[in-house]
Each structure stands twice: as structure tokens, then as C-alpha cells.
Length: 213
Ligand code: TMP
Image (cartoon, rainbow, N blue to C red; front, top):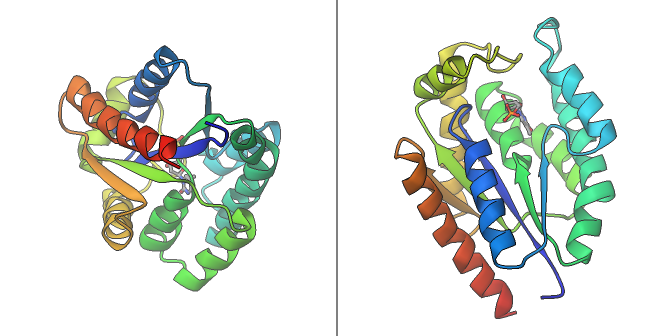
């Protein structure tokens, strides 16, 4: 394989992305493949600084447009500095969230106009698009229960009302319906083992289609 591909894990907060990503990484390494794990917001030194600003629960006054542009700024840096070079080296890039989150959270949940989101996202993406978004779908209330049971505090976005997280969840489901070739929805209320099994099936078919290219 001379060109890598990129898979994004996204979905409700607390749906188990971290565990699934670790399982997928292990699986790909066992197949002798070169994997790069990354995340958004974050992924680069600049992106991680932006992440701290975005998620800081002590600044609830952040304007929605500021928030949108910070996600966009981090994404532009992420693509140029990290993702494109890794793909050129034939790596499989796995990102914990990416551009679909901006549509879900900033458009469907925050209510920023779609055109504005597209403008910022297009600037950041500069024609780039991940190969597949795997959405781990879970009732937000159940996800937050899991976050609490891990003893973690809520970030600025998780600290929103239940309705906000419901809208974000629905945003992922709408995107998946609109672009079935770019999205796979997995029911994250299943056992961790079953979630991982379903995810690995998707990864296997992606590997098969890449090999066929
Ligand atoms: P994480 O908790 O999965 O690391 O994600 C951080 C939070 O940022 C999460 O609540 C989702 C949110 N988010 C957005 O609102 N827009 C985005 O574009 C991204 C990437 C994340």
C-alpha cells in the first residue's frame, strides 16, 4: 500500500471512542500496518494549546463564532502538519473526532448557520476529506453517566444541557443518512467486545477496498 487512509471515530461523549481506538490500533499493528493515532481538538502542539482554550470550563462566555474558528484553526494545522504527511508515508491515520463534530456540535447543537460552518470547515480542510467516519452512537445521558463513573470532570461542551448533546447526537445521525459512503453508525450501547467486533468489520472492508486500488 503506498497511500494511507484516514478513519475518524466520533459520536456521543462517553461512547467509548478511546477504548475502541486502542483496540483498532492493536488490531492494525498485529497486521503489520503503520498506524498514527491523533485527535481533535488537538493533534499538534498548536492544536493541543487550542484544545485547552476551547474546552476550558472556566470560560463559558466564549462566543460561538470564536469556538467555531478555533476548531477550524486547529484543524488546518492538524491537516497540514500531521495528517497529510502521514498519509503520504502510507500510514493509517485514526483520529478521535474531526470535521463531522463541527457540523454536529456547532451547527446542529449550537445553531450556527450551515453556510458559516461550511465556510470555516472548507478553509480548514482545503479539499481534504477523511475516508470514513465511524460514529459510536449512544444516548447522551448514558454517555455522561459513563464520563461521571470514570471520575472525570465535564469539559465546557459536555457541561451543556442534555438537549444540546441530544441535538449533537442527532447531527451525526443526519450526516450519516446524508452521506452513507462516508459514515458508519455503530450502536455503542452494546458490550465493548461487540462494539469492537463491529468496528473491526468496517476496518477490514476499508483495508480490502484500499488494497484493491
Ligand atoms: P473529546 O471529549 O471527544 O475529546 O471532544 C472534545 C469536545 O469538543 C467534545 O465535547 C466535542 C467537541 N467538539 C466540537 O464541538 N466541535 C468539533 O469540531 C470537535 C472536533 C469537537
